[in-house]
Length: 231
Image 1: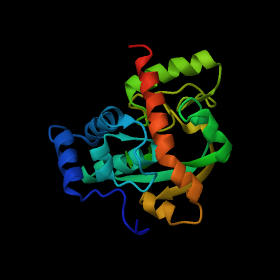
Image 2: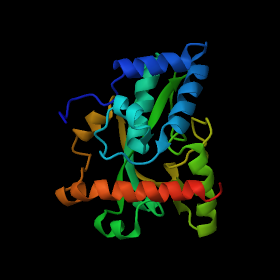
Image 3: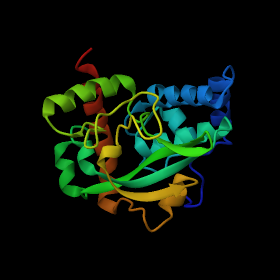
Image 4: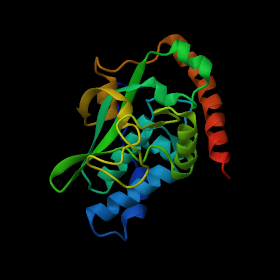
């Protein structure tokens, strides 16, 4: 991918159409934001496509699955298409949040922390963070039970290190799902591609990139298993 190519492609016809469809009967920015939030949370299920990070918002609409970085890219694009100011905020996250999601053998090849992102929206004249769209509600409910059973504070794509988590329409300084595991703040960006082009972003090495499609398939099976436990 061209490092300057925009990932939150809000002018893409499919993104424009989806934003219009979601918000046409909503009046306020808050109502529009909630509709977009619910769509990104539940209609884009938590999971991993065969590409890592360099995924356009329009592609995530196609894949109907995503994780923190790709769902953030889509959330920003849909917000902008609906005239809601939005931007990407990035950081490094404790990789333990993927315990129970990635197969256990993978962790010997991974650093202690990895790249992560969430969204900030401008509401009431101030930027406010939101990340509770990352896990779809069905998955979150089952993963939360697994986390509680494990006795851990961080795993299964949830962190309780800084308090209880949420998958509800919360933003500002409450209701996070991943923020308790963030170990380094790397600032805000207009687009995730800007972060990827910076010296703060650490991409996969050749071996990791080769391994990722296999990991994605295995992880998606594990995620499906978690979703089915209580059904």
